[in-house]
Amino acid sequence: MPDAVLTARSLESLLGDWRGAAPGYQSLADRVRLLVLDGRIPIGTRLPAERDLAGRLDLSRTTVSAAYRQLREGGFLDSVRGSGSVARLPGPALALPATGGEGMLDFTKAALPAATSLPAAARAAAEELPHFLPDSGYDPVGLPHLRQAIADRYAERGLPTTADQVLVTVGAQQAIALIARTFLSRGDRALVEMPTYPHATEALKLAGARLLPITVTPPTDAPHALAADGSEPAGEDGWDADAAEQAIRRANPALAYLIPDFHNPTGASMSPATRERILAAAAAHGTVVVGDETTADLDIDRVGEYLPLPRYAHRRAGDPPVLLIGSASKSLWGGLRIGWIRAERPLIQRLTAAKPSTDLGTPMIEQLVVARMLPQLREILEERRVQLGAGRETVRRLAGEVFPEWRLPRLHGGLAAWVGIGAPVSSALALAARNHGLLIAAGPRFGLDGAFERFLRVPITYSEEETQRAFAALERAWAVASAEPAPYFDAAALPSVV
Image 1 (cartoon, rainbow, N blue to C red):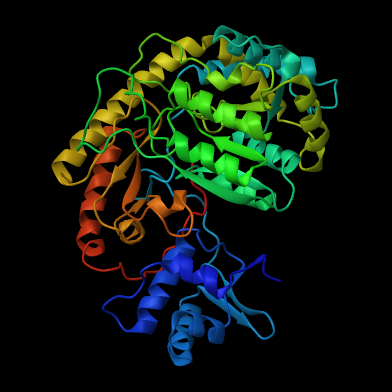
Image 2: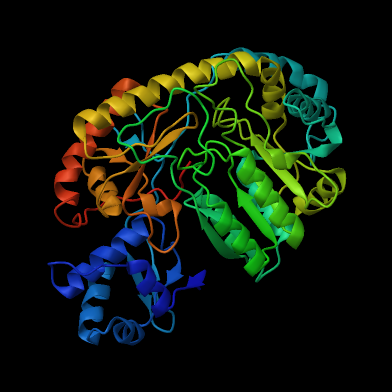
């Protein structure tokens, strides 16, 4: 049985402005392919019946039947009597493509290579491991000395924290999913930024939440603009605080999921005034505030300084519950699947009780590695600042040379640039780029219902040579995408985005 059912009305919303110069059945099939490849129609979803979709789109049933037939022949639909037409991808499941040599260059991952100190930390952790072997190895809350090291990091940044206020998870993604399962009931509303990290919205929806979006925009749309200092004028941080307050007041969401620093994907950082206003609105309506800080340490411009904690992390009388999510994957290495949640003790106890339903323990060796590296974080972050600064300059320079009409926001930190490409062809561009050896996430992957076709997320985490290759592929793909929707070719999509 399919995991989900897509109604004709919902599919119409996803399709957007799909009609083009090609025959109707061809244009419809091309658009559905893009939606499947981009992950906006999840694999296993049952599409609406031909008659229902034809009525909704004001088409003949023959047109819809022809489109569905083409999708079946291309391997994008399975039609089973009694079960309808179910979305799938053609061909066998693929392993991750290579990022070098003659393989595909994977720009769906905005992630850095491992910190240079990681091999030494891994060797030391392996030598330390025998000390823990007499135990069972099932560790539901995290090693005590790792939790203390994480707590010390919060205290160093200005938020007094004890080890029992920290729960270690298998990456930040598990932290998001655990919070969603614990604090949301089916039908609850969850406030989210748009655009945002797509796997967070997936976790919220799997918990049964109805998403309540608020818009985040880059701090400025000036072409290739970079600011010398880290400050933003009041009211220009990218968040519409008035709209956020109204959304909370009107819908009374159970939870608000926010990325306040170096927001993924826009790169914006929330001002102290906006943080205070959202906290006050949440307090008035009992909304749980979740601050995803996985990118918060990745500052480029504020050299030698620690990024201050979000103002809403400091609890006051009447404040709503606040949970902060952190991760080793962005600053240390993506292969270290270690994340954590910082919250008050009763909340940590509640999360700990809920955790065994999906996970009985966090990998021991990875915890030992992270515990070794956290005391070196100041030096590691300086290394990252240099890498990200070089990557930012390379993207800015190449964008100016290859696509002078594209618009880059101010970018003071984080892992990617949210680039305005000037035309609603992001999905078509991403699809065409595959034909030239590049995997990249289209703008709508970070939104809902097909939005953000005028944006593309471009990582700043790759070498100059790799970034040059990526822009060469985008330049060739642009010639196709800017003229008409890219034709289908037999290449599988990666459903995940990092």
